Image 1: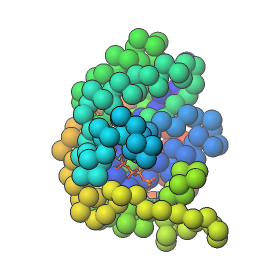
Image 2: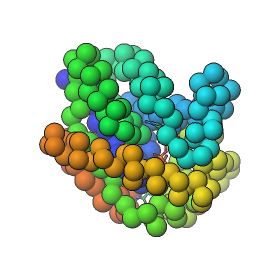
Image 3: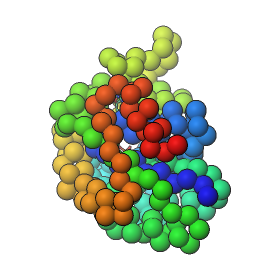
Length: 207
Ligand code: AP5
């Protein structure tokens, strides 16, 4: 059966970085709800208009909205190995996901929790840069963009918004840790290590 892997962790823990590498090297389809929403904002679609203020304030968008997006996405990915990066983020989203996967004859195979102290998150996110053409993630100190690649900073990577996102994570997303621990699906990786070390830990879980 096709694999369904969930990445959970605070903002800036490295979920997107690791998911991009697994997509490149192992053929997983990387589904990032953050990327989907940001693209909608950039294109100025109806969805984009609805979610812009939530994202800029560091708050979660309404459950119903994001659940509908994932529902459509999952239907297109029959038979493919997927990584869900940034979904689910609330218990209501996790319950909806279980139901959707069941209807598609799939299940959650593993949940990887990226553990990292809050102080490190601030450093990582304030140095994060994105190549808007490819979506590739860089860091001015830990993974600088190659010469000639023009990069931008995300609007929600300002310190006050990062702090709000962390608060939202601890209040609304952290309860998922117990939800998946009870199902024996939770695997913890030390996300403060180097990207290569984190990648190895993840491969140990999913292979
Ligand atoms: P989203 O885009 O999902 O943001 P996030 O969860 O806050 O995660 P980030 O993308 O900030 O961090 P990451 O863990 O992917 O880290 P990265 O690999 O980039 O969500 C944004 C917004 O969308 C939310 O606030 C909300 O409004 C909305 N939203 C999305 N999903 C939703 C949902 N399900 N429900 C409701 N609302 C939703 O790494 C960070 C930096 O560190 C980079 O610069 C990277 O180069 C560097 N780095 C990575 N790994 C390492 C390492 N091991 N060592 C050193 N540096 C590293």
